[in-house]
Length: 340
Picture (cartoon, one colour):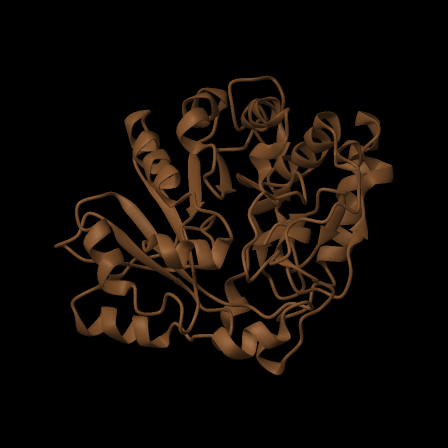
């Protein structure tokens, strides 16, 4: 069945990509680079070590063909990830291209925020609708210890600038780390009391390169969940294109709290997102066994139907769970490799 999504003459198939567990996929996480200029302990503690030339990452035309195929099958939200996506010199072109695709209603990005203050107005003008910024601590000393850089004040200024240029909400990602930032909740709550920030605590996830760090610093989000529930916070109802966070609100706060707890039972039951790496590999899961090469079908527009068929064939075989709770980490060596 074909459903008209705009006033254009073009029509798009309404059927979403769907797996054998009846999960439908509305949300694409699209990595545009593996490069990053931070050295976060949980991702790239030794900094980014190039294994590919920048020219090997998907071109704007290749990215357009990916997004067009997903939009054709009902995807309405694209999140641009990395690495640090804004390191791409053609990042504005990428934003504009995605925002022009019919059926795409949300164009989001996840950024470390290093150039946020300087560029967020240009990003918004190019079509960015939603923004996530990583801020792992409000203590400059701890922030430097976690990220390897001393950019906290620049990033905080960038978040304020995002509000000034018209973003109604900014999501802030905090990787929860025992003995580093797990005591920062009071400071974070004070910060969001009068600011429209959705603060998202993300449990540390084990990848192939960080077994020892995981054992030292993994902290469950259950304690924060229990604190919120006992202090009058209420859970919001999810929308179909939302990510995995359980979001809580409180009438005494302008901001919100999100919890992403991938080790929680049934976490994967509501999965609605697929991933494509900067090298054109389709990943069913951040912790999957392998990637599926799409690049041979990204060279010409006429290969679109074959591209859609290849994606659906593999989505049909998507596993029920990531099995993180059983110690499985898949092929993911670090979170920057396929967009976190």
